[in-house]
Structures are given as C-alpha cells and as structure tokens.
Image 1 (cartoon, protein in one colour):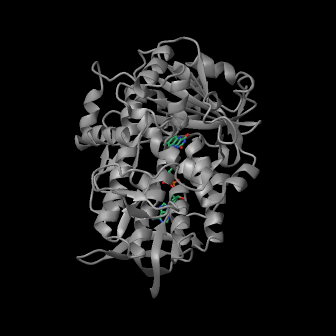
Image 2 (tube, helix red, strand yellow):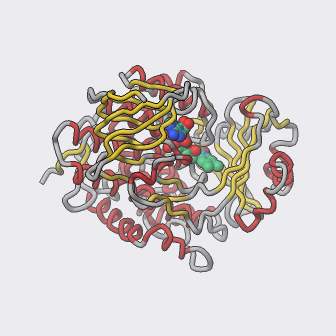
Image 3 (cartoon, protein in one colour):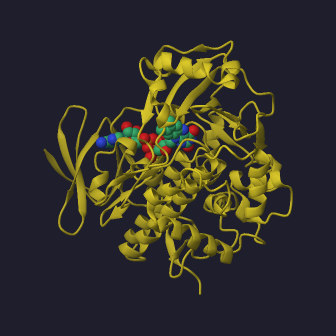
Length: 495
Ligand code: FAD
C-alpha cells in the first residue's frame, strides 16, 4: 500500500457535486485531489437542469460559455399535463421580465457530456483528477476524519491524508455513514423510476420544443425530455403501490406503461426505442428519496446525492448537488483560510443545505396533490409571493428562480421569516413531514416555499451575472454567516 500523499481536500466522485466543490476549493489556491471510480465520460440520469445551475453555479465556475458552446437543447420552461386539468399547461422562464434575456433558459443535457465538461474544467482550475480510482474507506481518529484509502485501476491500494474529505459519490456512496449518521428514507416519496431513450419522438410546437414535458397518468407520471433533435429521454415514475407494473423485463414494462399514458404514447407514435450503446438499456431506479441524519463531521462533509435527494419532478437534483457543493466549498475555504472555526462554518453549510432540501421536499409533496388545477397552482404562487402582476407570472418567477430579486416582497426580513418557518418544519424531520401524505396533504404553495426555494439560486445567479451581490445578503438566521464578496467563503454578517 502506498502512503504519504497529502492534500488540503480529497473529493470522492466526479459528478456535478464533486467537480463543483473541487473547483471552488481549487479556485482559492488549495491542493485538491478528486478520485472518480469510473472513466469519464460515463452515463448518469438527471438531464433537465434549472437556470440557477447553468447561469449561477456555472457562471461562478467560469464554465457557462463552454456549456453554451456544447449545443445542449435549450429549455425555455416546462409543459405539464398535471393535476385535475385535462389539458396541458406551460410556463416559460422568459415570461418574467427579470429572466427575459440571456438567463431565460436552462438546458436539457446528456449527462455524459455535461459532467465531462465540469470535470475537465476542474482539471483546468488545478484539481488533480484521478479516474478509475475507487474509494474504499476513510481514515480517522477520535477527533476527525484524516483521509482515505482508495484502489486504482490495477487494484493497488493507496492512502491519502487530507484536512477534509468530501463525499460526492452519489446515491451509491460507500462512505456516507462515516459522517456519523444514517440515511433516512422518505415514507412519502417511495416511487420507482423506469426509463429509456427514443429516436424520432415528436416535439412540442416551438417555442416549447425544448421544454420538459411531464404527463401524469393513473399509476404516476412520465417525463419526456428532448435531449437533441433526435434523442428523447422518457421515464415513468410509478407509485410504489403499482410496483407490479415495473416487474419483468424492463423494456416490456416501459412499453406497457407508455401505452397507459395517451399523451406520451402519442408523442412516441413514430419513435423507436434506442436499443444499442449507452442509451440502449432500459434502467430502473428505486430507493432514491432520502436524507442523511448528518451532513458533516470534523474532517468530512457530504454533498449532492451522497447527502440527500428528493424526487425527479422539477429537476432539483443537479441544483441541490451543485448548490450544496458551493456551500461546502465556502465552509472548507473559510476554515482553510483560518477565517472562522470549523463548527461555525459547517453549521452554516448544514443549515442552508437542509433549508434548501426541506423547501423542495415540502413543495414537491404539495405538487404531488393531483386534485388542484393549474389555475389554482398559479393562484397559490401569487398568494405566496404577494406578487403584483399576473398569477402565471408569479408562478414563473417562482419556478424560474428570480422571485427574490424583487426587494418589495423578498427583503431580508421576509427571507429570515421564511427560513424560520421552513427550519421549524425541518426540525420535525423528513419522516414526520411525511404525515402530510393522504387527505390532509397541503395544497401547492400553501406555505411560501417556492419563493424561498429559489431565493438562494437567485442570489447565486445574480452574483454570477453581476459579479457581486445585488445587495449585501442578510444572514438567514440570528448569528448566521453570509457569503463573502467573491461568493467562495463565509463572512460574518454586517451589524
Ligand atoms: P452523481 O452524479 O451520482 O456522481 C457521483 C460520482 O461518484 C459518479 O461519477 C460515481 O462513479 C462516483 N463514485 C461512486 N462511488 C465512488 C467511489 N467509491 N470512489 C470514487 N468515485 C465514486 N436531477 C436533475 O437535476 N434533473 C433531472 O431531470 C433529474 N432526473 C432524475 C431522474 C431519476 C429517476 C433520478 C433517480 C434522479 C434524477 N435526478 C435529476 C437527480 C440527479 O441524477 C442527481 O441528483 C445528480 O446526479 C447528483 O449528482 P452527484 O454529483 O451528487 O452524484
């Protein structure tokens, strides 16, 4: 076994959370090693992104232009056959005056390409990236995690010492328990996803042809994501009570489910399922909705799916992954610079991360209530935001991530009030939030969830686009920290 290498930070996993945290730490001049089990590019699900990721995080990383040049399908909004309304309804990010222009879109991405761009960018920023290196365990003493052990492609074992180990190894993490907690699975989101890829699927009429299309049916809902003019990602998210529908050969099961959802069946009327190459397989995923009871301990932090994931609807996965990566990087950079202590810095990371996760969790519970129609969704959005313009615009402001730009309804005081509300909800823990399942389900936007959900993303986006905070950000809770001027560390809030 080789020993002796020392880094400031070792990141486990080269997905969006791993490459993002590695880059943000390397940008502050620290020595970062990233270990990735696979050889990139590698397949991953999670193809529909949010504007806050592609303009905000990618902007801060300095990789937006490269992402734009990659030619991914532009996502201008979403189209839903959802709730009690039989007809599809749509939203476009550009309806909001605040998103009109260069940040009015996100992308539908082939994750092989998107993740590869982010990982290569990490290399450019000075991260030492080693592929085909699988992390086996962490090394620790009574005080803290001190490093880890990995095997390389030849099977040789290596130990590495580091001030911080970041677990960004996703859903299949082997080391998340070393942060000292358990993975708590949701009782509400107990769905099964089955998905494949098609050639020749129809497109919604322009300008919605790049939209994600979500269509509910009796057993769950479908996503229909145009990845290019040719390829469409199609997946069914099936409630656990209909688990029998996903039994047997996955390709046959997917075909049967498509036949049960007329809207998707029609979109695929002239399409052929891809049967070769990386998109040739029909895949099944379950047990993906959970949150760890601890997100960090001295010397170790969890980001992305290693820490938590809610549900595919509304595309929160890569947003949470990259946003948590930024939060963790701020904490690591702060401690490595000697600005603040580890407890204080990581308490801020955990509070904001749980806040964001909790907002999505609560919002998505509400969205799964199919008894509302789209008008009431929009009306709820207007009510939540106290937005002065149309109800549709209020909804778009929320789901597009710019609600907090309007200081008249998202001032520091209301941000703090929202944080207190959702933090209170979270204290009752993920499993207790599940009590909302059933007849007493909260209607969508009953609480002011969505404004808060997007608030953080908007700050990041504004920071990236304008090169600094719109306004000095207020601490989200008493005694809490705020991002530094460059966005890469924490600082004490101004009095
Ligand atoms: P990952 O992308 O899983 O990356 C982890 C990396 O760690 C991998 O490259 C892996 O090879 C590596 N690794 C694992 N173990 C080790 C080890 N021991 N040593 C070294 N490396 C290791 N999100 C969206 O934003 N939009 C969507 O439309 C969407 N759809 C989804 C649909 C489904 C059915 C599911 C289940 C999820 C979906 N998601 C979506 C969520 C999205 O897939 C994840 O949130 C996202 O990939 C998390 O990124 P990550 O970097 O944390 O983990």
